Length: 254
Ligand code: SAH
Image (tube, rainbow, N blue to C red; front, side, top):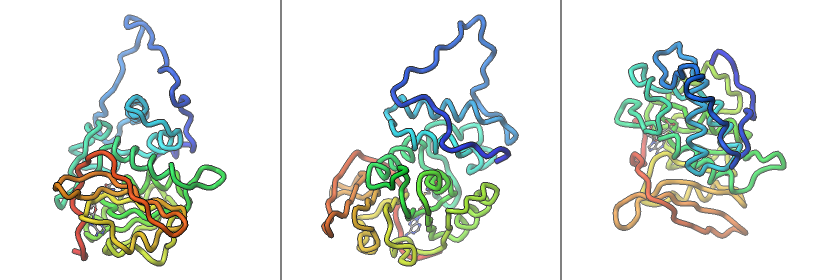
């Protein structure tokens, strides 16, 4: 990042009407598609954030975090012109960076759980660092983020992608996230970017009282859905939300 954006970024209040556009004749030609690595991505990212708000993302903390992270720095240079589209993109080794709307939705669900007096999440575990994009977004809304990846090449790539951002509260780990990461526990939130058949017991064990897990899970009929697991008074409560498409959660490292 050449210029570190302020946090929270200034955004219209959720639900506020979109700023009026100048009449077409008076409007300067608008550049809406980034065209290379040296792009000024501000306008396209702001447009992505407005679209997210239009799709129902209400939480200003999420919108500010999505506005603060340059998504184009996490994708292959050949895909840069799609970086701010609402689409998942390949990041190598058969894995994908999630759609911005899915990242925003999951972080919004995480933030709807318990936060501190400043509206920040405490410690968060992300399973599936991938290219590191979602980890960077999480670092804007949580006090500490532990992000674990099972593929060494992606773990290294995420490290490269994230280095210039100097996010002191983000810790990248190489290992099998199905085991969680006990050293960082207990977590206020656990978020998975890969879907398994069940929520591993290590995750629920490492979840703090009042904490939340947001994860894709394969349902009995074979399709994935987003699942929320909450721990209240030592009891686990699971809710199943909309259908999603994530890469599979796999055990072991490679
Ligand atoms: N959040 C990522 C999305 C990456 S895709 C991003 O913003 O780019 C999901 C990732 O989960 C893949 O990189 C895959 O290798 C990883 N993954 C799958 N099973 C895992 C496990 N048990 N532990 C850690 N990472 C895992």
